[in-house]
Image 1 (cartoon, one colour):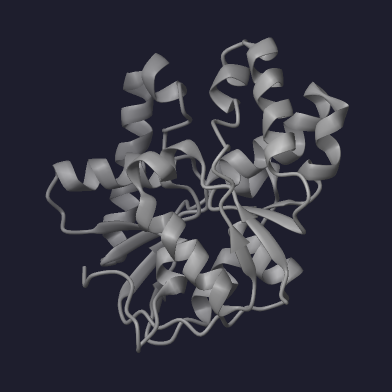
Image 2 (cartoon, one colour):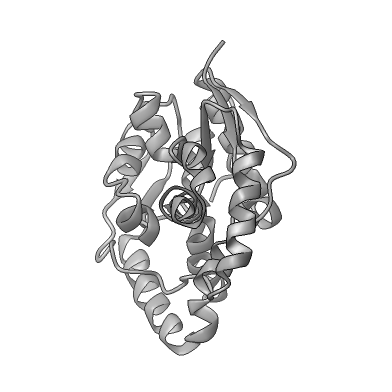
Length: 243
């Protein structure tokens, strides 16, 4: 029996991007993991915490810890939500620490825990990668997503200029500071378009929703696609439709 993994899908993925969650399951099962989806999972409380509702966030953190208790690892296709659980939860309530220490963003779980960089993926398209703020600065995943992408057969990986600059989403930041957020998005889209990539990928659907929405409104033809969906794709079983 392989590693017993719980999928922490996150609110945004569960609601708007279920294909990403399915891709994570397919990918991890292909790598020998036993994957479960605890149905009692809810919001991790990041929005509550970031807007000052610490008591509400603490209740959600304690519930989250109970829901994901007993697994070898908890894997999330989001550096933002994984960062909330691992870095903030222990400060909210000590009961969350054991579970928080077993929580991983997808790319770090693949590289650091499973010890793989080549997951057997095939994706014959020109791709550029945006490193999201929480994965880069809070979790420190570094080049792990890039290492995974470099091993994808058929993929033409193009470097993104000013890659470590925020895309401007930032959760409630985009609502409270719409003009600044839009200006940051415009810069990010400019750099994406300079690569002439068919696909822009990242480890967080929140950022991809922001970038992809902007690119769609401009009718650029560039598709935003989560890293998990690229890694889940194989020559025998293509996951994502042709961009």
